[in-house]
Length: 327
Image 1 (spheres, rainbow, N blue to C red):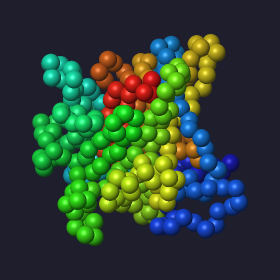
Image 2: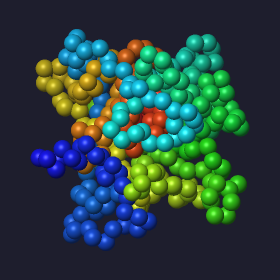
Image 3: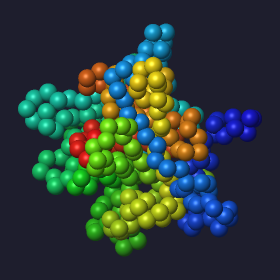
């Protein structure tokens, strides 16, 4: 039991990778699962009915106010939003959606603030117009959401179906980068929503692929030369060296409310199919990220190590995109 407690206190080892090559010390019958040696875990999933989330959260909300984010200070906003969350600290944020006006009803603005008294601004995002696929720009300036602006820090891009997304940082496209790729953009995450081609009602399934962490707890750079070497393709081909695979947490079926239930510890108060928690299969109690509705256009977003603010915000933005094939 003491070893289990130590594991949960120090989750860093869960996300560390073993170098550039797969470890050769795998036991028979086991496979690499994104930086781990262990048994493959199938998709886990969650969905929310109106009764479920209200039932879950009311247990906590009646007695506890929504806990604010711990005090977090930084001198360089761009550096902070791209660095992993400090270990042992849950960064608690609020996402607001601005749909006011004719244009914003189709292309809302999204803002990420720390959920504390100061409401410190972190990021803004908006869907780009005239793009073949869903394409969101992420900026550290709420008034500058241009691709060529100096405040551009990341991008979220989907496939044609709107079921797979890739998160990039603000460096150069591989076609314009140096031959050694040192200034090429990094892929920060791949997000996959399992398609529901049969239209069966039930929990949405979601997988998140992120780069692993080295022994110094720094993100291992993933700079693909082309889309065939990106996070999504590597995951599809099960080339998981230096990568971590996460899933949304399995909800518990509640007979009394006839719904799927997750415990958000008072941070989520309204039902939404967008509500989710992201975990690693090796420790389902360690919430890497959780996201959920508290008002029509207000959501809480909490993230932990090894995610950074840009990764967490982009994952949340992907949940806003219309995925007809997933519902």
